[in-house]
Image (tube, rainbow, N blue to C red; front, side):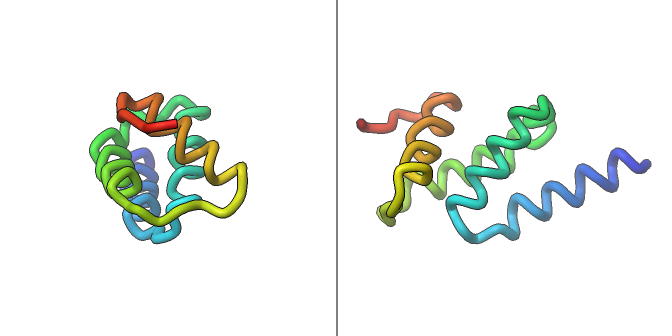
Length: 79
């Protein structure tokens, strides 16, 4: 039951985060923790929105996240 509560909380966190960099950081953290497979549909929806967005990133860190994480999930990201 506690596990389901935490899953629901993380799902809400993924969907409620509006900043793209924050979403990418959250996805990256979930992958490093090894629990991203629990949230595959939410991650896919977030990455779909990020990849279709034309908004650019200002710094190198943000740009590298936007490049690396979608590529790890099979998205075609142009260099």
